[in-house]
Length: 276
DNA sequence: AGAGGTTCTCGGGCGC
DNA sequence: TGCGCCCGAGAACCTC
Image (cartoon, rainbow, N blue to C red; front, side):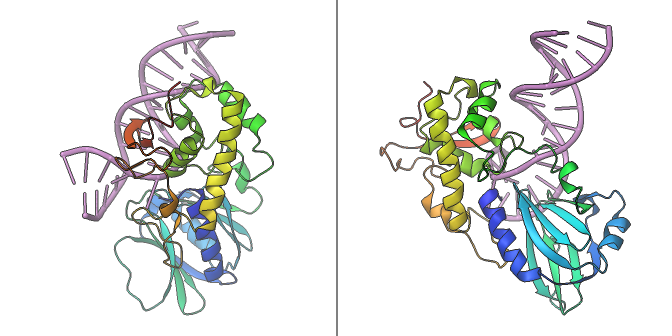
């Protein structure tokens, strides 16, 4: 579900909801979500009495900071957070509840149960999985044309799976990778190492522009995404190719196609994005 | 019925 | 042969 623009929107809305709240207790209904510490009791005990001091993001990971800890949360396909009054019933897809000292609680819901949480003492979180080894943020100075060129040159993968690799660059998922490739006029099955300097420069700029525009629109809602305040995104209205199979290309008018690349559904315009 | 916005693990292939 | 890296396939789970 969420790629960088959606996670960034969740970060902002979640921060508004939970900043300065103190966790009194935690219930975990589906223990497999908690990846670290290995013992669920340690996870729960550590958070008792902690106050939320910030909500950050690294790639597609949310980071909920308390006095002492960093809670790393990945929403995967369908994870979502919401603040509820204590007396409101919760459904079978609610897997973790953080009870606050006021009359509210933060609930983590995840229909597919793919999401993950890691809890570390603050300061070491970036040196541990799952944050260790991640590539640069697309909006950082580190993500330059030169960097992208160097990385793409030395891989044998197709460009789409290469860009989806969070070790190369964080934030792109199936929607935005298709969008960025279309906007740069690059076929998703091109070998990454075959891209010319000029194409890489354009691709770099379109990755940044696409993600940036999507953040401004609160992300894309395709079927289930909502932010922590239950609001949908608006960037789906701006999409060029994702989910538009058979519809007219907004640039050339020819029908868009959908194939599978690297095991992922892939949308593109056969006219605007040529193999070579 | 199979695909869906994600990423981890596993095993094969290849090079040193 | 052994090791390590790279890459693709499959798995984790539920809904429509």
